[in-house]
Image (cartoon, rainbow, N blue to C red; front, side, top):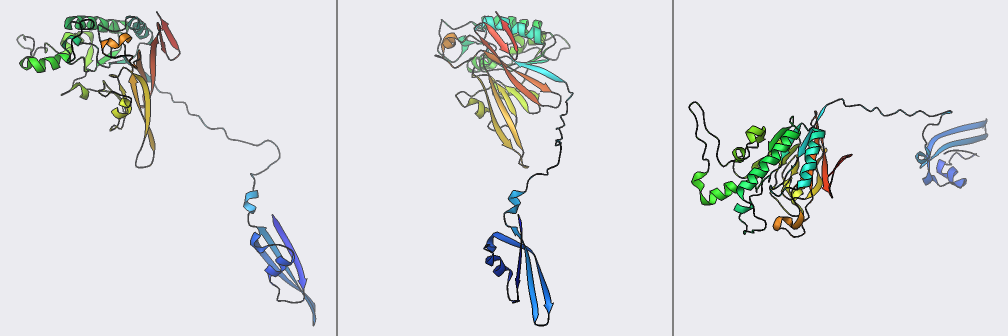
Length: 349
């Protein structure tokens, strides 16, 4: 808001503030933008005129966007289509054969036939081996070592036959490596024992390895080699995503698993179905979201396999869509009451 004040007085000593106050205006509320002094007459009959242009101090609050007649114009945002390919990864785990869930196994085979994922990662604890575990024997739940091997092999064979173009990799889990742990305690000198070789061969297969026992080479399944504990085995999925069996338990197992990581992670081990995120910031102040997905289990949950009372387990597995630029999205497939649900698809027994 502008104001123009004009005053005439024969005395030239009047100041702008005097004139403003004479008209009942507080000088603290206004800014003097312009003053003009005029003189009229001649000789002893001279009058003076003082003109003051004022601008209210808070005038900026009254500024509004430009107004024009007719309809306004608003530029639409430009949306770029990303024309890139992607691959589907599937992460089944914790079947603990021979205690895999029989109905879920059937539906998972149907899932493989229909989706034909490009890549698959067996997340570990494919076999149970309770008969040689460090836990107290329980005849109602213990299973013979050979039964675990045979049942596990037939299960993996079905996976491969259902989706023959899937490139499979296998992570070891703490149950899978019970043979190694058992030998380490009782017969360490038999560790590394290999098949006899024919002339010209470099070396035979290690007799008590998962690769040999489960015939992984014949199935075309790559074993995730590692040094030391199974905890160090991992599969690279994308620049910002990897898979490990996992080794932590408890309500914070997921976030603690990525505590010192700068990438997202898919894990098994806990048998829980859970996805959590945390934010990381780089030196530019840019934020990056890290995700950890606990992929559930594919074993029987009833009675907790004899060692867990009312467990918070879930029959589920994880999938990941990985785009060519390295970005990815993670989904769960959930089994409950005879129905396997994944994205907008369902399979029923």
